[in-house]
Length: 124
Image (cartoon, rainbow, N blue to C red; front, side):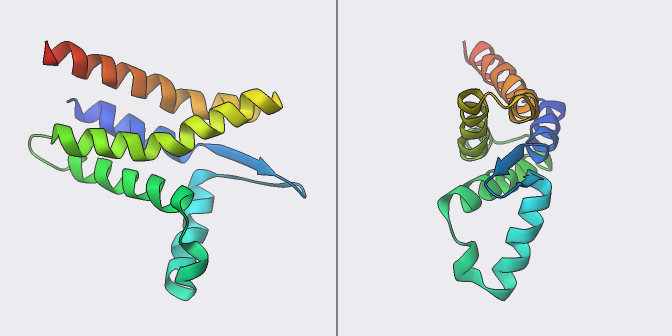
């Protein structure tokens, strides 16, 4: 596993973009900051699978980034956890025909596909 790929996955996950009712919008890095603040002040308000799974995925990818030989199992688990929100964002962008959401989720999805293909190639 290339560390550049892991770093690209982490960075591209931060630029995921969301828009929701009332003119609200934000990038994932902004929304994660809010979730992390709420974890300390009001943990029950921050606990939700669509907030914790991607956060866990980022933590796992960060751990693999700093391992001497990145763990394949940790990488795959982190990628799956983080992909839950990114694939959902992409599908929402397609359904709503919102080009901002689509364009912001594409770097992660392309990098994830390349990483999986690289893993499969090395596995054979």
